[in-house]
Length: 66
Image (cartoon, rainbow, N blue to C red; front, side, top):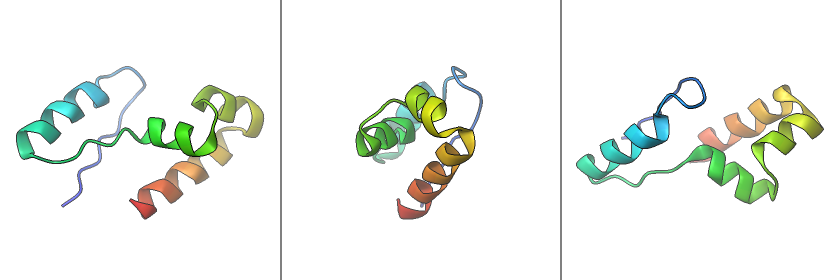
């Protein structure tokens, strides 16, 4: 089973996600960190250089591939 947490920036998704993953003995994956590593640039840079639409396309593909 996969669980995805969504919400505004800074609302605690990573903090709560790590706690839930530990409790359920799941692996926690921070999608933003995974995207930054694969793209070799920050989320901020992706937004600045390519726009939100491009970032959302990358994000959607990562979710499919997980």
